Image (cartoon, rainbow, N blue to C red; front, side, top):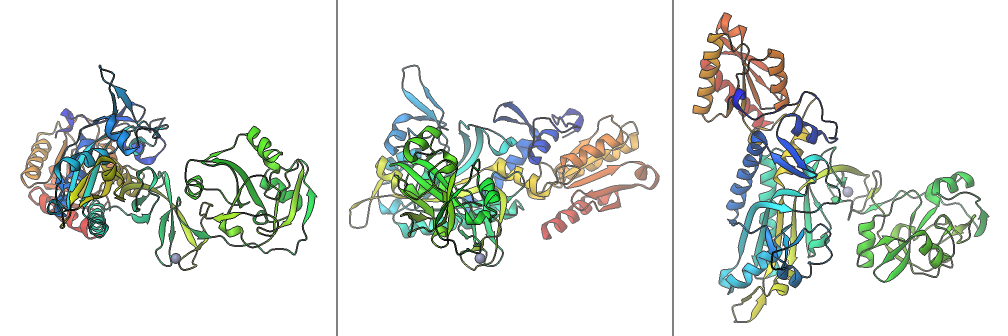
Length: 564
Ligand SMILES: [Zn+2]
């Protein structure tokens, strides 16, 4: 790869429309270009990173008995209708063929796997199976953003396990967790394995692999004490309680105060002594939802507690069901069911009085109103860990992988059964497992980049060595740089030779921006002393070695990086 003939269009400035660090650097280093919202072209260096990541994934998947297959992007609607997922997933791209038959673009392949298993698996002797593919997925994201982190078309490694019973599924699931840890370890990512919500996949349990990064769109709660870690969608924490005053129940005037902050200021009280009352429309109708004033309702938790889709009520619905505007509603005397966060069981609070301009002070759940309790609030940093009581931290993360115990939902729907040892027909027990290769690349950039550009970890770097020929007009430099370039490739070291007729500063800036682990400079020191400079991108440590010791010096940097 000679730079003068390669498609590596680096940019000096940050692109205006990019916010996430990984997005900026992937554009600036010439790894990707955006064709349309959430649709990217991978240029040669970007493609090489994906190839490296995919090779690691293949090795680890094959090591646990995975068999690689390729399933289609175009799916007939029938299999999605059979599983019950044809309706209700707004991200699904749907289309029709010339005969008017419904089709969709695959966003995941549980249906296709169950269809295949229904035809090819006959007996318990055919189980277990692990099938996987590395293939393009299509999702009609409402808001594609953050570069390659949330796109409408993306590469995914998806794996599926077929087992005879839940105990066997547990073994397949554990094997995947181990394989995933090895994959992310080999990609040198920092990550957490956390409990997660099963979401649209349904099923018996799931974990996510989360890489801490400022650009992350997910948040996890983690305990430094016991190691508890969970997606905030399911994480539980115990909020620090306020000191409860000895209030008698009374109505207080709160003219013009609509928000919690305004009410707390007007009454000169801690916001933790207030309750936020929110009317939601759930699967069985309106529900008044209560969380402590300083906290946020987590809609996914509410959806699980109510067993379906939820949405905030419109202002006219609030008036219709509660007879007061949104800022004045409360649970006392409410004509709709009340669901309260479990931490509101004890204590006395200020709540809306269902009368504009008034609140009730000294209200207790159970005594002044009836309600059901559930975990509803989004965990915030500083709450106590439910396991050990130590304070929880909350971190932004990129989801780089997930594993699901699906159970028999898809196999029952699509007739994927096997005959057990006594000849009885049983549904196959399934699991599904995903990894986003582009997200691994983006997470590596987010976690390791410095002010000058990308710092690739060796195993997924697009190439290992960037050779700067300081002056291409100097024949001796040029010959030496070419000889080093050839020697690198001859020794399995992937090198790019910057042979452009550019100022040295431009080449050095590009070398830092591209972030290949080693830079080799052939310049004045070579002309004067016969030495070339070998520099680690990560540590910036530089040494001068004779031309024929370059490969040794490169391997020394590789070894040193593998140890840290
Ligand atoms: Zn803990």
